[in-house]
Length: 321
Image 1: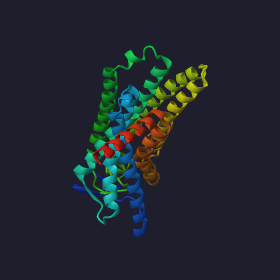
Image 2: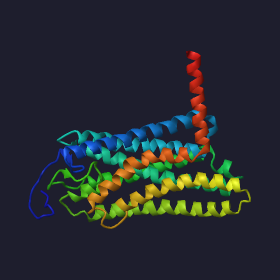
Image 3: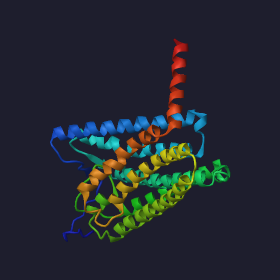
Image 4: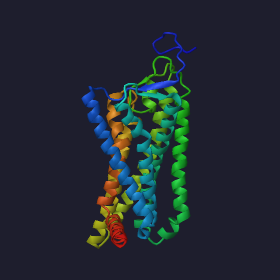
C-alpha cells in the first residue's frame, strides 16, 4: 500500500493513463489538430527529403552530411513518437494511453531527444575539425570514426532513456491517472506520483543538466575556434560560405538547447506544466519541421543536390512518356 502526497491511503493499480492535452472548446481542439497536422506533415516531408537527397547524391557523401542525415532520421522518428497519438487525442473524447504505451512513448522520446543533443555536439566537432584542421580532417573524421560517433550518440540516448523510464515507472501512481500533458514525459508523470519524487527530480535535472551543459560546451568551444579561424581568412567569399554553413548549425543548436533547457534543466520546471506544453510543441514538432528548412535554405550544396535530383526525375518522366 502506498501513501499519496495528500496523506490519504489509496491504491490504484493503473492499467492506463489519460492524456489531458490542451484545454479548449471543440473549435479550439480542431484548430490545434490542424496546426499539429501541418507541423507534422512538413516535418515528415522535410526530413524524408533530406535523407533521400543525401543518400542518392554522391557529392553529399561526406561526414557533415552523414551526420545531417542522422539528425533528419532522429527528427523524423521522435516527432513520429509524439504527433500521431496527440493528433488522435484531439479527435477523441477518451484520450487514453495504456501503461505500457506510455512507458514505450517516454522511452523512445527520451532516447531520440537525447541522441539529438549528442548529434548536434558531434556536428559542431565535425565543423571544428574541417575548418581548423583541414589537413587532418580526412584521417580524424574517417568513416569508421563517424560511425562510432553516431553510435555513441545513440548509446548515450539509450542509457539516459533507460534511467529516466525505469526510475519514473517504478513510482506508485495512486492519486490520479490523468497526465497534464499531450504526451508521456517525466515532469507530468512525477506530478501525479504518490511517493517522494526527490530522487527522480534530481535525476532529471542532474542528467539532463549534465548532458545540456556538456554538449553546449562542446558546441561553444568548437565555434569559438571556428570563428577565430574564419576571421583570420583573407578571402571574403570563403568567410561568407563558412559563416553561412555554420550559421545553419548554430540556429538549430540554439532552438533545440534553448527549449530543452527551459523544460528540463531549470528548477521549477516540473511545476510549470502549462508552460511545458507550449515549449514541448517547439521541440517535438516545430524544431523537427524547421531543421530541414534551416539546412536546405542556407546550404548551397543541398540546394544544388535537390536541383540535380529534380532534373533526373524530369528526364526519367520525359523518357517514360
